[in-house]
Length: 126
Image (cartoon, rainbow, N blue to C red):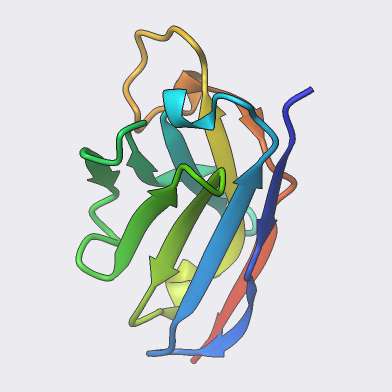
């Protein structure tokens, strides 16, 4: 069973930074696209960022582009989300996800992913 474990969430003031990590118990981690999604209270889960298996292609939601950076270390089976210039509207539970082995869905779509972490809370105070 594939397990994804997120860490790095917390409480930060607006303008601050956090780095989220997601470690995956997957022998072939480097074969999969990885994504980050978030869900704010009362809202639907939304795409944040994704990175292709080689790390050569990345995707970002417009609301985080220029502030967040997704990266991966295939040797450590870990994907990261560096979040800078945080805003109160970035508050939510952040989930990492592993892509399906074969999928026609875009990396930005939750339909592209079949394994999810338990989530880590990020709270940005104004």
